[in-house]
Image (cartoon, rainbow over all chains, first blue to last red; front, top):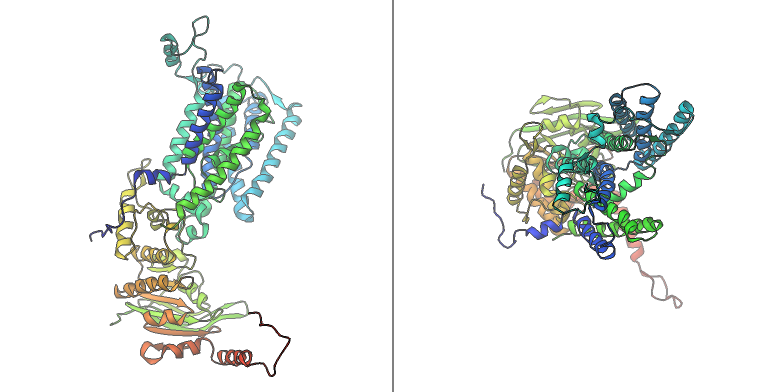
Length: 364
Length: 276
């Protein structure tokens, strides 16, 4: 049968389609923030190799949390326990090595196994009790943090675990989580004078932290899953209207369990990168990271009510976060103001998202 | 219109919830190419009948037959696999998702081998656009959000989706009750088209004016019992309305209203215009 396309309706233009993308606001925000700091802090070192590496490192670590958080929020739920999961996972790696004598790689695997368990328990508690995920994971946030603190102090007598990576400095798996890449590229850029060299002629930074590659890879993977797989369609469906999704046969519970496991795995990846980078674990690591991840996802276009958002947007949200944090530092503004900016940005982002959503669904 | 064979049939079906008899000895038949209207006030047992036909509840007693053979549905999915599709009042549509994504929600077409297996957007967009064109809904692009469609259009998309995925029996739960006149007539026109295509349609409503134009037969329900089944020629629109409202109740209401309408007994000099 021929498709009777009505010729009174012009095909949607490329621009209109672009306007409908959820990450548009975050892209515009990123450009705005970069422009603002270029004007305010253009000559201070923010836009040098070292300054940008710092920006990207902050963005990458937050982005690793924000990507699964965005997927979960599109699926209609929150996970407030990821900050505590970071502290917990770090301590599992630390105590695994220092107290139980496990090889580092095995301690890392154990931490990831615990992450799957934490995500699963969160999801099952939330599904069985039918309480909002906000409440269930709020409880998990306190329980996990308290457990981490109590067990660590009980076993080691302290709240920090040092010297975790001693003896493992050059193993491939430390490089996998905490190494630097593109060292040759940085050396070459220094040689041709694109990057200002140190007095001794070496590049000012060794290379790009490998966490940036993790971040980019995770964002790309999440975007592909969301837009181009059945599971992605189920995430949107479950977050958009759970009953509707169930009526047409979407396995709602399974989708949510997988999403909660993803956020816990993201938190554990973050913890692993941190522990292997600094070589120690601390029971207080990751505090407030759950809110930062939600902020990045919201700036990136995720609706608090679910069913809408993007992983690329969350990556832009994390990048804005990195630029603002380092920008304020380089501009010389008292860094105490950082959180004021952050709060204001969240408010603006939510208002903008609500406007975009109204536009996206209004009858044409 | 010549109706075909009986597709689905209920014989003396009752369903109890504890000591409450939600429906009692209901018998109904729907043929291919026929619209059966299930009419009744709230609490008449219409929803219970839908839920038995769509596999949510099993009957407490009585038989369910599909193509003349007794059948027991294990789940809604089982009923769906047997070609019985229910379009619920809440539509099973997600407003923020595109038409194509909604159309294939839960049955996404995929291509490629794992791990490159992916949602076949080309096929989904093409099929969604074709199906929309068939039912006369003009869309700019199958990627636009369902929220941009009108209520009537959304209901039609939900029905089109059920038909596309092989429904032989279409159960429509109050598809027109939330719609304006123009929107409702769009849905009614589509119901008539589904009938012409040979589907067995069960149309649940409490609006006689919507049921009468498209219905071939009417089953009237009151308090869980059948008040009789009628062919279109055997009963008028007004008679159906009277029976549905439960006769006496409507008469009682008329008397009550007449009481209000009676002019006041004497002049009331102190009374201003009565507030409406």
